[in-house]
Structures are given as C-alpha cells and as structure tokens.
Image 1 (cartoon, rainbow, N blue to C red):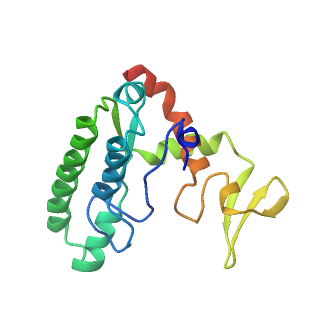
Image 2: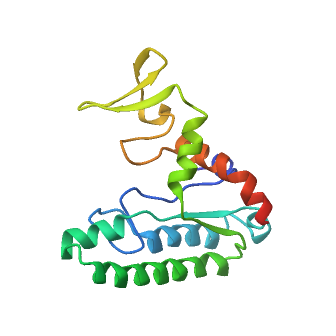
Amino acid sequence: MEKWEVANGMNFAYGGTGVFNTLEKPPNMSTQISFFQQLRQQKWYTKQELNPSIALLSLAGNDYGTSVVNHGNNPKDMSDLSKLVVNQLADNIKPILSLGKKNVIVVLDLYTAFQSAFAKQKNITVMDMDVGVLIKVGKEVQRMQEWELPFFWDMIHPSQKGWHAVYSELQPSLYKLF
C-alpha cells in the first residue's frame, strides 16, 4: 500500500465485530485501533497530518447478539452488558486521543444516517440473491462486482462507497462540531 492511496483516509473496520470478541473471527475494535496505532508508529501520518482529520467510530449490535447467542436474552444481563460495552468503547477512544487525534466521533444513530443517504439514491435497491448480489438501477438489474456496489458488499455491511455516502450525510454536522 502506498501513502497516496490513503491520502483521504482509511477504514479499519471489520463487519460482524464489536468492542469485545464476537461470533465472528475478525479483530475486535481494540485490535482494529491497534492497526491505526501501528501506522502512526511507522510514521505513515504525522501529528500535523492527523490534526484536521476526524476519527469516526461506529458500534452496532454485534456484542449484544453474541451475548444473546451465548447466554440468552435476559434484560438484566443486557443492562450489565450495556455498561461494559460503553466503558470499553470509552477505553477504545483513549489510544486514538493519545496518538494526537483530537476529533473523535462515535456514531450512535446509524439508522437515520443511512436513511438520509438512501433518500438521495431512491432508484437504487439491493436485492438478496443466493449467488452474488444484484443491483437494481431503475428498471435494469445488473450483477455488480463487490467494489462496484453503491452501498453494501453483502446484505448487512456497508461498502466503502456506502460509508462514504453516510459520511457525506454526517459531514455538515461534523464540521459544525470542530
């Protein structure tokens, strides 16, 4: 990977993960943040280069889903787990701040951000297929390669383009914060 390829940022996220280990094998959020730390230690980015950037963290329900599968759906357990998840999320922000990253945003309402992004692309829908993913653009259905998908690389996880669309929706309010 060349530095110019990530001049506008990079995504360390893995679908299916959480702040803790989940049913998925990819690295949890702490490990994902350590990947960013390694790049910083390797001097991929200077403190000055990081100053105007924003670290955008997103957490969905994978920790809760894992708990339900492993321990059942007890409301008391979910309440206790919520405290642990929030505390771990707060702990995960600390290393980002220690690397000189001052602007850290945690997206809590992904639903509204995605609905807003979808509203601007009303003629595009994703249909679940047994073999591959098809995109309906107007009346025409086309098979798309993973990297060409407008929003998702599967039926749940946003593609890089999907996250870009959501970020574009969040961007005006982010600039107001900083």
